[in-house]
Image (cartoon, rainbow, N blue to C red; front, side, top):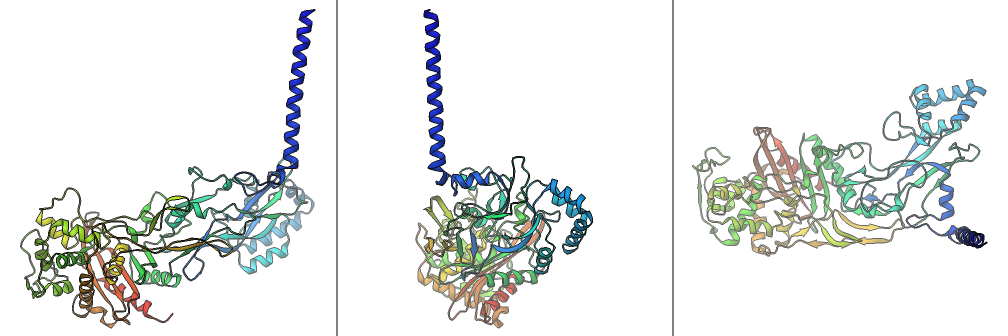
Length: 607
């Protein structure tokens, strides 16, 4: 009897427990259906009701929702609407239609293939190769854009399961020298990626992330809040419900996608890309800075890259040479001259004698029989190695290093700021190299190393960005300004999200004196009026600058890096320009000077 009562008690407790569980589940379900159904889901931009509908759809992405870039005039650099053909697979219905009206269906498909300049069988194969909606690619990796005539004719055909939709194309369909912009790559395992960017429909399309350039450094801001999709409703078996028409799904937030306003002038960028092409530049870079604030107006790197077809393992094809350090040659004599003036190791009218050969350290002047008697200014204008070798003997290596640092060399100089928009560090120049003056193995009292360093050889490395900014620094009486690539980020409705204020980039050692800066600017005039830049005397603007030739080795063969850095016009400086032609034949004429002149002539021409 007691045993029976014990079992009954246990069963009662179990029933009560089950009743409580089912009651809680019912209450929870009621709460979800009555209250939470219209609330935005955590990590998404949609309500539970909307998400439940999305789970029964198949879609293709028209726009990733990623932020776009403009130049400083507001002209779009990324993001252009084009038209593409979308296939909506309806396998069972397609087969039945072919049986019911085979000739009419086949005739329309043949017409479509003719419009697309494709074959009927390959068109049908691409249509049926996937069970989800997808763009026609013609066997490639990107949607093929349609022209207006194709759009109109396809619309007239009215083929069920095929339609034309606008698709956001991020990059132009050609290679360019805008490596500073970067590219996108499929990186699904990026840590910290927001859940709001998970696929909202059951299609495994990849959301790409910034892999280089501004695309990478601004990635947290550019992601957006979700894609725009065109979708079709599907049944429980995954088949498209043909009676229900396609619909477009887009995030409902007027602030996104963001718009990044760069400092680039698209017209100048394009013109200089063309000039590097016509000049025969194979490797190198051109940087144009606004003298007023060091903003980058153009930054061209060669070889060009195609952001839609990048091999991540081959950085030479997409790396930005404008921020990669290279041997500077004689443009580094600006630093040596500044150190000599600052430390007063050379008197104003002191004469040096150049016979062409220095007699030690394997050093000689580029002029075979020498320049004869000349002072430091003349040696600067003629880029005389002998004058600067004698000057270097009076300096210490630390004085060269300190002066270089004061002028913004041997350190990253591009704009950056800490703790901005939730990011620990925001940089404008991805993987900017700092350059250097010497390696740790070089001793301070090594006279040969010091002399080689003073003429921009040995271990010295400078980036074209640093070189152009060096000119701006001299024109600003020695104050180093941090070049910018971005001036602000706006919301889609035009409001400002984030300003990027101008920054200085001071050295802990201070700066050179205004008198030294004025002296060097004057000597840059002399380079063009009397020295190695005389070929620039016929330029549209009066320009000034400094040439440089560095001896390097490429795969065991001797090559030259050719440089010319300067500014114009002299009367009212507007632009500072650095030109680097890398790995040029030693017997070649000075192509960097010629290209500098062409760049300045373009900048001087009416726009």
